[in-house]
Length: 199
Image (cartoon, rainbow, N blue to C red; front, side, top):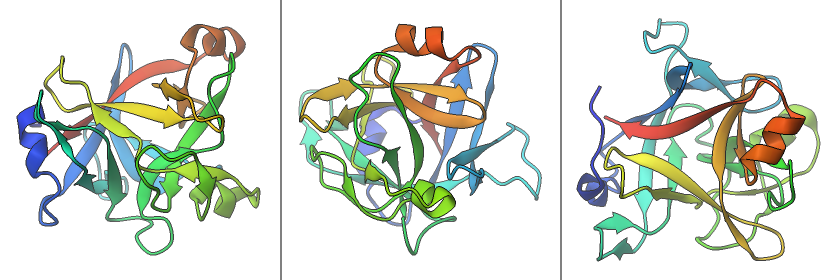
């Protein structure tokens, strides 16, 4: 397992390179899987995957690099194995996370522009539930203080404000959360994880 330094992320936009997403928490860890749960979110895969449980393969599409720390300011992650035809990106599905206790799931989405509010479009939650939902994909940044390719989602709410989201694993689904304390009070059993790119 090789983690990616921020400097290496400048080359991630090359189409030939593909990566895995790993989630790590206090008592949990594994890969983001290439199958969906009944709610349209990504399944988890152990760190020792089998042929039946395969990690998701991804490409990273970077935008304008930040000269100060040599990392993309914000970028999208493309799913290369699961939903390439209809919703090829990994993003948030929902409207806002700036109210206490609110969250949105991670799933497959269509492309959106950097800094844009969530918009209508194809996504895996709508496919699974029939419920029309907003979504956004160009939400990812790298935490330069860690240096291991750790992803930090920055979510633009419907009112135009931006929230640096935390990632939780709750009822076998990955969720983006704005207020961890409020969410944890209302949803016992959530486990906070970091998403990290590896080669």
